[in-house]
Image (cartoon, helix red, strand yellow):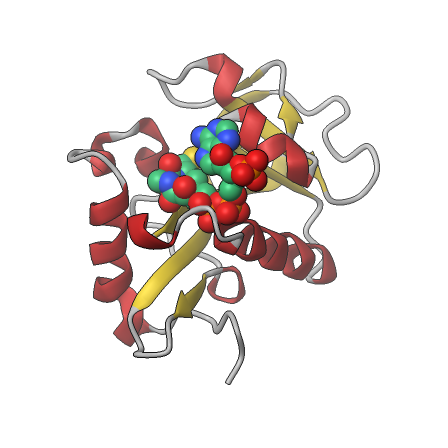
Length: 161
Ligand SMILES: CC(C)(COP(=O)(O)OP(=O)(O)OC[C@H]1O[C@@H](n2cnc3c(N)ncnc32)[C@H](O)[C@@H]1OP(=O)(O)O)[C@@H](O)C(=O)NCCC(=O)NCCS
C-alpha cells in the first residue's frame, strides 16, 4: 500500500468530510472554488493519507487552470486533520504532489495561501496573476517546476475547461 495513495471516486466524501473539519464553514464559497466548478481534478495529483485504522487524516487535490494561454496547476485544497497537524503530513502531501507534477511534465503551480508556510516548498509571491475576486493578491503564490516557468506569465486565472 502506498503511503499517499491516489484518491479514488469512493474516497470523495471522506475527503470532503476532512475538508469540512479543517476549513471554516462556507469554504466552497471561496473564489478558488469558482475555478474548480465543472472541471475534474488531476487524478494523479489527488493524494491522501490514512491512519492505521483507515481514517483519512490528510488530503490534497489539484486542478488544471490557465493563466492567459499558459496551463497551470491550482494546488489545493490541502488539509490535515486538526489532531494530526504539525507532524509533517502537510509537507509530505505537498512534496508528493510537487514531485509527481514535475515528473508528469507540468511546468507551473499556483495556490492561494500563507507564504510563511508555502515558501519552504519554493512558492513565491506572483505578481500580475489575478485570482477571481475577492482574493488577497499577497496570497497568490507560484512555483516553477521548470526554470523560468512563471517568467512573463500574467493575467487572470481561468478555468481550464
Ligand atoms: C496548513 C496545513 C495543511 C499544514 O499541515 P501540517 O501537517 O499541520 O503541516 P506540517 O506538519 O507539514 O508543518 C507544520 C509547520 O508549518 C507551520 N504552519 C502551519 N500552518 C501555517 C501557516 N498558515 N502559516 C505559517 N506556518 C504554518 C507550523 O507552525 C509548523 O511549523 P514548524 O515546522 O516550524 O513547527 C494544516 O495545518 C491544515 O490542514 N490547516 C487547515 C486547513 C488549511 O489552512 N489549509 C491550507 C489552505 S491554504
